[in-house]
Image (cartoon, rainbow, N blue to C red; front, side):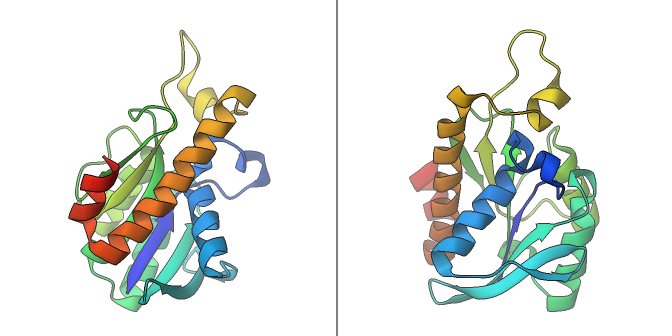
Length: 185
């Protein structure tokens, strides 16, 4: 069984921000595979389904970004999911706008949501799909950049990136993390 987690912030104010690319990717996966992500438990919204003949759980933590690991830890413990069966999708300022990066393992970098995930799971050994949101330009505030409104000229690139992220998750499930990294990196 795979646990596929999209990181984001639960309130409507954050729905269309760069920081919610994980949620957007989960929504695309859910739509493609007809999985309802409406159950409330484990400090999140989740749904169960099948992708490429594998049982999956899609999860959108509802704890706010900086505490995302709490939700993941609860569902991992309940379903006894191994770290290599967890795929975390999140926005990354160090990946070019509109692109993605697939990694087998790694640290949290500067991402507070990932810091929470790594801390709560007590491991860095889980696959992740980073959705490139690029860096703020000039002296633009980083927080405003990630949780502020997305300019029109960036929306299409982010839409393409979340579609790529969805495809990368499917590739991981279908053919493994190594093939996904070769195909998408």
